[in-house]
Each structure stands twice: as structure tokens, then as C-alpha cells.
Image 1 (tube, rainbow, N blue to C red):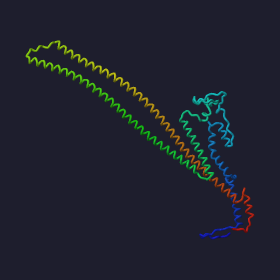
Image 2 (cartoon, rainbow, N blue to C red):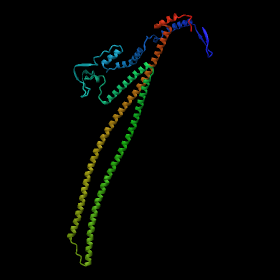
Image 3 (cartoon, one colour):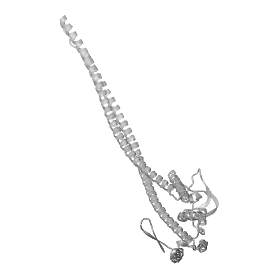
Image 4 (cartoon, helix red, strand yellow):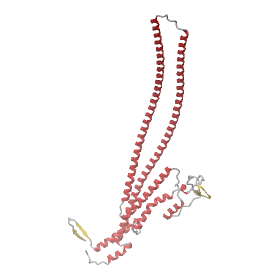
Length: 406
């Protein structure tokens, strides 16, 4: 044992080569006894390729087992999954597949894209093709869009995993996964901002439509009042014209009568008594004028009655049309609200899935790092102590001359 003083004043102990070998052997024996407690220290020797391959297999194994439990998955895909997992394929029960000898059109396919199949559904006994049996057939455009979105997301996630594994194998960094997480967060924030903008636009549109409806109703009322006023003014103008005509006729006759009377007074002639025929003629003319006026008033009254009936029928018809439009609008609004609620649930489910996936990836990363450290520690221990495939190092150390010191 030697003591050496370092520059900072501390002393360090240096053992001789023989003491180092004895202490190494003791530590190796102690580590061998302690290594029996840990099973991770007995891992087989793996190169980087096999280690990456096993890591990828362990990452996709839970997803494969979940897919294997799906009852609508095709038998061929189940066989491929069992082949990857080195398991026997599950037996196909008789009630899941009903096969006929004749072929018929699928009950769920459209007439344009109809497919013929021999399979029947075990519940309703109707013909069903492979697409609808595996869940790929869709009845409307909305389900098709949702399925395409899920397929695109699955491809993106698969590409992210592959690039992340490649980056880990090459440089050991998580740059691709971080960028993908940032991209997903940006997409989520963008979707939230779009939703808020949509809500704002929707409320503003509703307010504008309500304001337009109120102004339209006010304009209708004003137009109706103006029509009534115009009709009253027209009636007043006609009455005033007739009255003015009667007054002018009366004034003309009165003036002519006064002129005749003045002439008679100048001539000092005896005024003849008015004839009864003339009075009767004037009286008849007045009665005829009053009868014509009464007839015109009656015709106007009949005309306005007909117009009132027609206008009321038109208003009733328009009111029924508007009520039907309001009912359709309310129904459409309910459908849109249910669709929005469904979309909100899918977004919440997606956010929950992202959180669970992040937690799962963190756990797998911790386990991988722990496995890497344990494997590195065990390989270093094997090299230092010369065990296993590094046994030749122990013999090389024994053949070194004892007097050779550094």
C-alpha cells in the first residue's frame, strides 16, 4: 500500500498489483453472489441490431395483442399476428362465419358498388362482404372521413415510431418524437382556436339573422301601414274630386240663375214662376248623381273586401311556409349540435389517448435506459473480471511480468 500526496493536499492510497488482483477477485466473488439476485444480469450477448429488433418487437407486442382480441378482424390478419408473436392461431368458431355455396349481393353495399359474397352475418343472417365484416364499409360520408383521419393518424404515428427508432439507433436522441409532439400540440391548439372562432362566427351570424328578421318584420308592418294610408288617401282624393265637381256645377248653375235674375230685374219684366218639369229634372239629376256615387262606393267596398280576403290567405300561406322552414332549421340545428358534441367527445378521447401514450412511452424509455445501464454494467464487469466470453483477458493478466510497473 502506497500513499501519494496530491496537489490539493489530500492523500490517495495506491495498491500494488498483487493486492489489486486479490481485491478484484474478492469483489468478483461478491458480485457473483450478488448477481444471483438480479435476473437482468444474465442477459445473452446482443449486438445493436438484435437489441433494436427486440426493442421494436416489445414495443409493438401490446398493440398486436389488442388487435388480436378484435372480433371483426380478418382471419388472415389474425394469422399474421400469431405468426409474429410465435403463437398458435385462434380457432374459428362456427357462429362467427356462415359460408354458403351460392354468391349473392351484400346487404350493406350500395347499388353502384355492390359486391357479391358467400358470407352471412351470424346475428341477422344477411349477406355481408369482407369490407363490412371487417368494419371498412361506411354508410355515409362522415364515417368515411373519420376512418380516413384515423388511418392517416395511424400512418403518421407509425412513421414517427420508425424515425424515432432510427434516430435512437444512430444518435440516441429524441428529436423526431419531440418535433412530432410539438406538431400535435400545435394542431390541437389550432383546432381549439378554430372551434372558438366558429363559435364566435356562429353567435354573430345568429345575432345578425335575428336583427335582419326583426328589421324585415318592421318593414313589412310599415309597408302594410303605408298601403292602408295610400288607399285612404286615394279614397279621399276621389271624394274631394267628386265634391268639387258637384260644387262647381252648383256654382255655375247658381251664377247663371243669378245672372238671369239680374237681367230680369234690369228689364223689369215679371219673373215667371219656375216650372215643375225643370224642378223635377234637377231633382232627378241630383238623385242620379247620388246613386252613381253610392254605386261607386259599393264597388270600392266590394273590391277592398276581395283584396282583404286574398291578402289574408296569402299571409296565412306565407306563415305556414315560414313555420315549416323554422321547424326544418330547428331540426338541423339539433343535428349540428349533436354532431358537435360527438366531435367534442372524440377530441377529448384523443387528448386522453395522447396523455396515456406519453406516459407509456416515458415508462418504456425508463425501462429501456435501465436495461441499457444494467447491460453495460454487466458487460463492463465481465471485461474487468474476465468471465464468460472475456475469459481470455484473465489469462493475459496472469502472464504479465510482475516487475513491470507504470
